[in-house]
Image 1: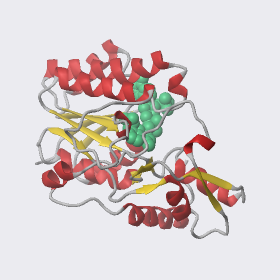
Image 2: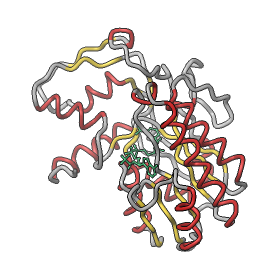
Image 3: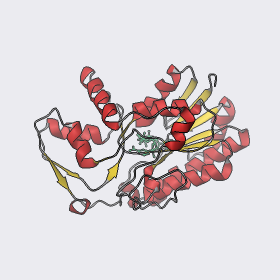
Length: 287
Ligand SMILES: NC(=O)c1ccc[n+]([C@@H]2O[C@H](COP(=O)([O-])OP(=O)(O)OC[C@H]3O[C@@H](n4cnc5c(N)ncnc54)[C@H](OP(=O)(O)O)[C@@H]3O)[C@@H](O)[C@H]2O)c1
């Protein structure tokens, strides 16, 4: 598919900041809109910006992402992830613009102990997961031409994330206690951006799972992150560290529909992590 004019919402966030240069490097004309330039909960603003630019595609990365905090402010989580996404979907429908919505493994309950296919039933356990599912439903309700891309356990060069937290603690020689009974697929925003860029060039609308390849738990992930440091990592159970939001125990996503669409396998998660750690070492940290 040739060059597209693409609006990216949430362009100031961790994924948005990785995705914008990736799409630009593929020759797309990207209009990167951070929250200051497009508040998705402001319906008149959504209408006016989409009408003005009339893009070929909206890639929707903006979201309320504070998983634990959402339990105490559900109204805000639904306002942004549910109604904000609905504002975009309604407007895209009116202007006949396709949309890519980034969603989450947290739409699943994690109880089936095998990878979730794109047609498995959703059952989110947390307010965050429910609000992301509300966004998916808004997209499916209003649009025929959409991609829903569920991803998981993101980290990358721009923003607070598990990898940076673990590295900071290791650098300060702080003891690390990490849960070993939640399983998933860590995914670097740089490799996810390449997967999304591949997908938007296919024009094959639908629901996709896009993560780095392979399965691990947070404890093994932390050990891989600090392999170069002399620090101990202690495995603990989820019940040893209660948090406001319940996480799925096994939220691995089956990527077959994505692999069929883009014609390649995602990178193994450990390879992506090692590439990221090398890149991080060779550069000053990006804020
Ligand atoms: N991080 C993960 O592990 C993970 C896992 C699975 C799926 N996802 C999904 O991946 C996508 C990208 O997440 P991310 O990790 O890049 O999160 P992020 O760093 O929190 O980025 C989200 C961006 O959306 C902005 N935003 C919040 N409310 C907005 C509004 N009303 N209008 C416009 N922008 C608004 C945020 O701005 P402020 O920060 O200023 O509020 C932030 O810049 C999200 O859809 C998320 O649900 C993330």
